[in-house]
Length: 576
Image (tube, rainbow, N blue to C red):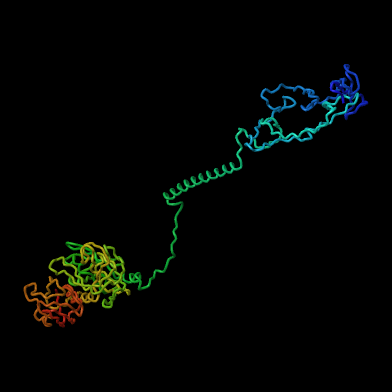
């Protein structure tokens, strides 16, 4: 190797020959400059390289630009300076995108990822040790050969006295803080790039964002669904739905019903029930009746036809809807019964009469009538009690219109308009004639006022009604069984007391009458009839009228503190 002061100048030999080391493209030869001759390696000698232009002129070879590294130093002096770039330095320190000249297009601007958080090791591109410590191959010059475009290696100083020392191991240095120091615009991106320099969200942050987005979407969907559902519901409510509605319905069933059911009883009895519209000079009303025979006799209550008794009009409407005029055959206020007759009507269906003495408390019953002029109304209930003594009427003030009934009590609803209608047993047979109700306001009356049913209805037993109806049809009037005494109706004690005189001032016991024959005297108190206790004069009348004239009665009397039992035969009277 040449000394530091000496210089060499390689010269390509003609034809690639020379006595020196040959390179791959030809040989180099060194020529000592005029300032210093001597052998190779002389400490005083200098060498010069022949300018590359000359070698290129001779062979047509264009040398490449030499590459000089900052580490190529000999004895502390700088190596050959770097050639001057083809363009002026960038005052803004912009990386050299366009080597070898400013005409190269610049790549799109890219920002590196943000500086990692404190304590996170920064990534750096390691430089291979071979590239740092191993020098590149040095071409051997050959005399007479042109100079190739290779950098000139600097001679390595030869130590004279000190032994070779191993190079210290330098720990890796963290990359500089400047992100552009090792920036290569053409290298593939090693991390996420951004346009605004913001911090790149991590995995946890991205998951939180996704959850927030899903939650917001669910809330928005719920709000929209609620709004749409409310709108649809309001539309359907206002417009009655989106189409025609078809409701489920049971299949048709046979129209027949068991004969002992309410429906079966009503089906058999309704054709025999009629509605009566009565009008008179002072009043009018509506009631019910039923057909007794095929000759047109109809049984009803006396208080129903009473407005037409003095020349009024009675219209009868049958279940079929046909109407006919009717006339009064006979009536009796004491029993509250009347018989009317229609003429010229065919196809009548008489009602079957039952036996009221066979009725038991709790037996099912059906009531049919025209309450408040609602014809053909059917209600049902049971027999609540038997032989219930009731009185009705009495509006005249003299007692002539008072009816005394030993009635059947029922809870079947009976209302104004039901009067005169039938009370039926389970065989559709008449066991009573609906006549009175007890209302909450005005006490006991026959259709008194316009009070409705409270479950206390009373019917005349059919056995008594049958006897009276026969007498009214046959004779036009009814007979009453009598004892032949006048009662003290003001007596407040227990039982029925015989008065001291009659209403005309005569004796209270009719001479030669049933009571006189049995030994009854004025002032006696009758306490029992046929073994049943009585508590008032009304009850004695009711018990007496429950029998026929000629029936035998057993009475218990109290006279002067003594109890006396007597037997008598009932007499007959056309009036009370």
